[in-house]
Image (cartoon, rainbow, N blue to C red; front, side):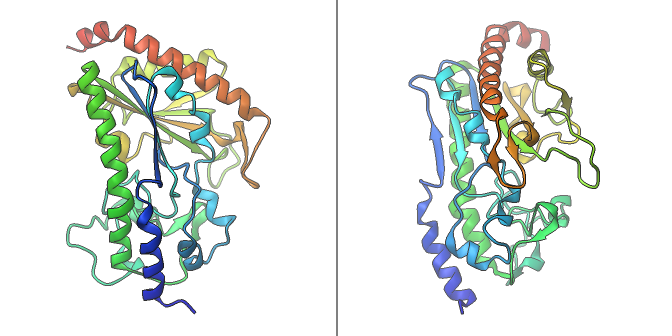
Length: 304
């Protein structure tokens, strides 16, 4: 039987992969002021994490944004960086504040600066998630608090440091920058069989991105024949809220893709629509980056 201490030791050994757990795909030359980000498509599960879970290897994947990194894989070809997490969201969620921790999950005292009262923590979806989709408990036992802090130090912080560096360099080069935060969503709303739209765009109700960017993205997707909602049911998470500063020339827009368009949510296998969707998203990225970049001077002037 693996004790908490021995499990923690093995997990720390797994954590010696800070660099390989985060991938930044760079263009030969960055030609557009955009950065694409896929924080939840990671599918490399540490063995010690799996051993500590009450879920099998299939069930624990239910919180993944399946293949979103592949859907946006053409970003470097159009001149924009793409950052991806290889570690899974169930292990640590970088789309949360750094210390949204549930004290009930841990053995030991959580730091005084922990935000343990957030709605996301209450729902089991803090920085160290307690649940995967469909309210399935992840862990057999409580974790040592140092384990949670180590994950933040070895995964969360490096991820945000790299993302911040990409945005700072983009802003310095072009005078402004745009972050597109890429996600997927279940095809149906919970407790309902009602289908969701094909896409949901989130700009924190207009606070994380300028209105013309959101309208441009919405219009491009609609022109391709997709149904699109804005801010409902997803207005954007921590990444969108944290990095979006339109007044400073930093815009952040979250995009949620309906999984029913491209993947079987029971088997996690790509469906026939995957290639067509990938091609549409490549065209979407091309048109979005070109149009917004070419018209940004007018947009910035109107905003003043």
